[in-house]
Amino acid sequence: MTNIWLGLFSGIAFGFVIQRMGATDAHRMARSHLMLDADIPRFMVLAVALSAVGLFGLQSVGVGRILPLPTSIVATGLAAVIFGIGWGLTGYCPGTTWAAAGEGRLDAVFALLGGLAGAALFAHLHEMLIPVLYDPTNAGRITLTDLFGHQAVAVAALALGFGLCAWGIGKLWRHDNVEKNN
Amino acid sequence: MEYPNKQRIPYWNWVPAAFALSGVILFIFATYGPPASSSGFVSLLKGFFEWAAPDYVAAKAHYQSIPGPGSWVFAFVLGMAIGGFIAGRTSRDIPVRDMPPIWVKRFGAGRAKRYAATFFGGLLILFGSRLAGGCTLGLFISGSTQLAISGIYFGVVIFAVAMLTARLIFGKVSEKEDIQ
Image (cartoon, rainbow over all chains, first blue to last red):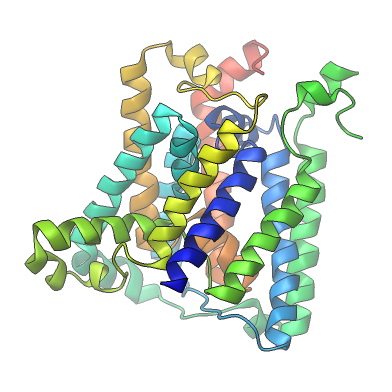
């Protein structure tokens, strides 16, 4: 029961923050993908950089539970391509459909229903697809720590890499808003 | 400041917003574990099928791997909807619309076309998420936070493909006119 309250509270806080960033607005998401608005992508990568450092801190005091997902070269890559087409077309990802539907956006309600259909379809085909697409190229739960040999170095590399991405996105994306206001 | 005219930008500044989001993410890691949202879809379906077709659920590996709706994963997505509702009701400036203006410029104001497209797109994003084992949050954000190669790999590809897809679909209209 505690878990349900924690989940509900976490979801409300998460949904609130992403709405305030405009991430539930498919129009703003499309502009982000078109490199016309840098704020959502750099908000995302900076949040990852900060979370990685914070999680390292939590783990060092023995708090939190982690479970990195395995990497399957074929399945993870193919899944990302399918996902990317849907994300580019609709401007919604699984989490934002719930927040946007709650906000009252009707197109997000349809994205949510389509999502239920997609999840049901995959669940139905799971036994057929996983052995063919996922298992043969499954490299296991590999992390940057395996690559760098030391967790603190890996966290520093990730935070630096994602921090640079946030900065680079700000440089590469156009700043229509700024130009208009000046 | 990047946006001198505050009234035109109703959204939070991205830097404090990133701190706020990572605070939520760390709270989730501390109190539950890796955050995820695509599992919530499976959880809801599992609840439905347990009522409608219990034998089917029992025989399917994917439903066996995710808890039913009385769980953190479903409470989280339900909370997201409530959070979106509260945020939408308490902001006067952030526009809530059923049709993104950029879509209307490209495909017209017909609602059926937009709703069919978001249904199909929603199908793709969840099919992909379930194949990879997670979505933008459950794989890219929470995976990368845990230094997982899967999260970084998934993140790079979803951004690249989504940017290419958006360019192919909306590239022309975004160049032609001022879409704000």
